[in-house]
Image 1 (cartoon, rainbow, N blue to C red):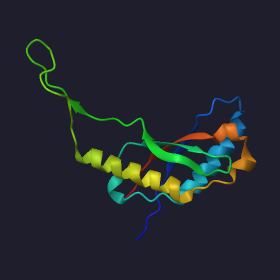
Image 2 (image 1 turned 180 degrees about the horizontal axis):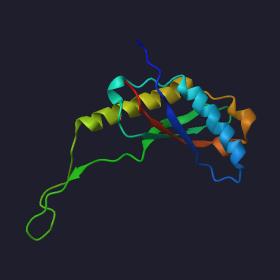
Image 3 (image 1 turned 135 degrees about the vertical axis):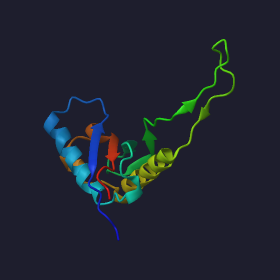
Length: 143
């Protein structure tokens, strides 16, 4: 059975513009409504921290390039010797949480690609206001 995710989706309009807050809110609401239809993270991702997906759009609202995960955190193990110097190369520690985080990121990128293009943006605000987007996906409340 497909589950609808209680979606916390926040959009950050990255373009350096002087647009008013109401124009940005309309763009954010539009993106939220479009992508919410396409985002279906698995129930095993409940409680995973939010992921931020960045992407650029062309003037028709189509994805330009590849959506990417932004702001990813990793736990790193660094071993020091008695003098406080690095004794061996730092290692990324892979945990179950990281695998679940990656699953959320994959599902978020998939949702952006699946729902694109976003032609309604052209009527809501000037292109400079929505050319570059960062969306925060948080799978809280999934069961």
